[in-house]
Length: 376
Ligand SMILES: [Zn+2]
Ligand SMILES: [Zn+2]
Image 1: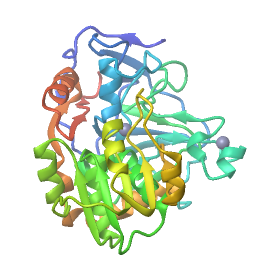
Image 2: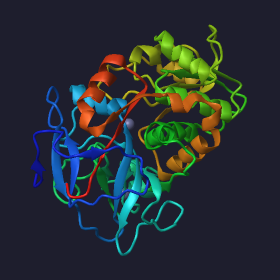
Image 3: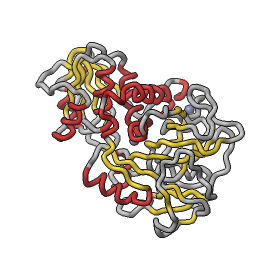
């Protein structure tokens, strides 16, 4: 790494963030760097990047910690390091290159735009991109998971700013959408949209959702919005079941014959139990198992005789992100999305944020970089 690491989080005088017009005045950008599990994140200074065609420097206003960040930090999942974690990010464009990036609608970015963007950057021309799986591009880059090295070192959300690569799928975020609601759009919400977009209409269908984390809760709202006849949630934690009820889940009755079964829990036991409740012609979507897990029991005769369709969904395409922001903008008043972030920490207190997230298991905690005064 070519940045300088600073030992203490408290060297610089800080002011609280939230001034949407504030800008980054220093020549270096501060970030919390992950090295390995069981070791505290280290605050480092990175040089402010010189922008090339289609790139943008974005000041991070909010980053929510996703389950996968916590899995990496705790060692349950292995990722390249050193890295700047955090991919559920909301930011404000600080600087654009002379040939500015376009958002997914084709509008040029300009300083001051409030944006989110896909965690995946894809080439848009390889065979996978052309076949509708840009998230599996042969030249894929991902925010929040990359090595903090070279020109693109600033690629994660636990930092003051991030360098957006050319060809990022960027969506402008309406001002009226609160930070805590908009922040998870580019991970949880967009992935849920990809799951629903994969299976087609759910109007009049009976939907079983496994796992009431943020994806499961979001899926309750989407299923209702899209006209599902019944939306039943299964989660072992009573407080999560209560949240699911607040998102509009129907009373969990013992029944079978669901038209749609979606797993967001990642628990193979839960998936096996859920499959027992799938009906004829069911569409089954697996989303949650993104860590090492055991094989699941699946009887092929049952799949065939019941005419099941089984979909695996990992990440999403840019259109799903656009759907996610539209959905949240339309519907966030109707569901308690704003309450899923139960605590907020300054970036300087990232270790407290992680401890809180691991100990309390809230749906989300938010981290906000503090804006340093000019000269630091
Ligand atoms: Zn995530
Ligand atoms: Zn590609």
